[in-house]
Length: 238
Image (cartoon, one colour):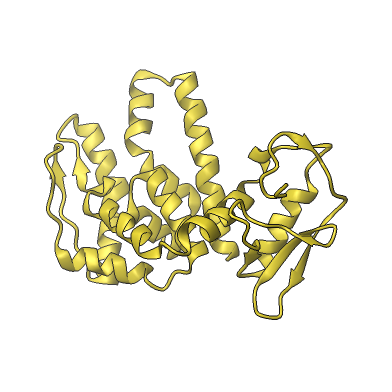
């Protein structure tokens, strides 16, 4: 049975360790046996820091392995099995997000929401325009805005050098926020995780302040935030 697809079963190993591979990279081992991905590939990580963090996930398991408590492992599996051979497709999806980016679609009323969006989003657009010579157009309403081709190509160029691991994390952050530009600003160090998440939740925060929160919605939001933080950590550990 593949150790990286534990399901609900008892812990079958004593300890997880990291081994440097001669050909490059760092493998996670369970009692000296290398962990494999669901597709049967070696779980080999680009940095010792990431490999050690994944080993710590396995060491932290109790008598029963809990798959939900292995989020870094899951991201690594995705990078190796699902992204490494599809980097162009994943990059295209990120650029598609940029072409309809959250930051570019604004409310026309009420004035408080209009102002909140401007405060949160305008600085990110200004930063992207200055750093990447990539201006993005905004509009009120839901009608599609055709973004400059040069701006979309600038986003593509900015992520072109990412390996499969960092591209995986970047894609997760993009889909969770609905914004390739927020993910770009975060990974470039312009926004920390709190600021990036707050920017993505501008509309939701305004609605909650205006009408009150919802317990189930808050739970879903907390789960998404945990995923975002995990992807952010994964990116940095790479």
